Length: 188
Ligand SMILES: Cc1cc2nc3c(=O)[nH]c(=O)nc-3n(C[C@H](O)[C@H](O)[C@H](O)COP(=O)(O)OP(=O)(O)OC[C@H]3O[C@@H](n4cnc5c(N)ncnc54)[C@H](O)[C@@H]3O)c2cc1C
Image (cartoon, rainbow, N blue to C red; front, side, top):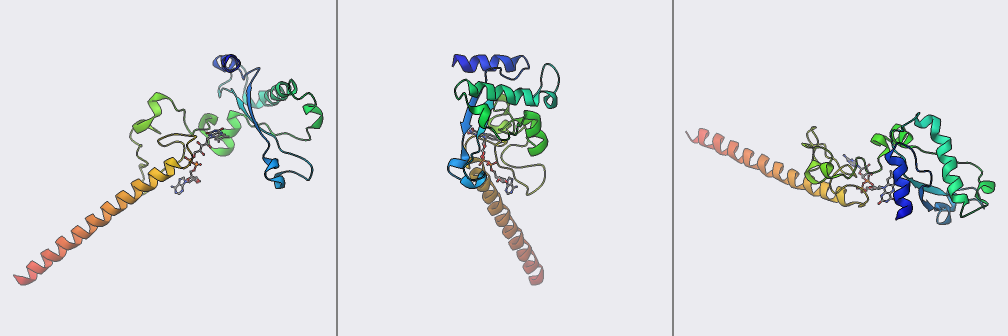
């Protein structure tokens, strides 16, 4: 906990963590097709990296950020530097530019109190609806936020079905009213 707290302290003041908290996975263990034979892919999810740096910009600091991660891993796996063939560093700015994640936030918007429940993603656009008629939203930007796989999509589909059934029964009622009206007109 203390390690994480210290890592966050750097980010609070606009610097990437000097001693980051690193979440590592090796996807090539379960899917060898993602790497050449006998080689592996190591994916590092790194915290913390603020979107706004106190000094300079991410394009200038990107490689230093990557070096910092590798140096941290090297404290536990000393041969890591010698066995790396290639690497890709994705900063918060890259996540925004390449994947449209605003400010590189992996949850498509911070899970802070003013952006939860009926205020997610923003006030007036909650409940999976958008300002465009019949266009609905799901994914992390909607309630209940990120990290809960599938829940948002499931609730969104329930909202769509409910509203579709409602509009269908309203259309039926309108049709019935119209046919009653024309029937009584014909009778008169
Ligand atoms: C780099 C990165 C690292 C992450 N790491 C972690 C982690 O370590 N732990 C964790 O818990 N979470 C992590 N997350 C977050 C996690 O991946 C998401 O919160 C999670 O995938 C959200 O799941 P979801 O089912 O709500 O939405 P998604 O997985 O986004 O699925 C939504 C789907 O709906 C589709 N869709 C959207 N709109 C429409 C529409 N109108 N019509 C039809 N289809 C539509 C989209 O194409 C998408 O396939 C990470 C995210 C990123 C980007």
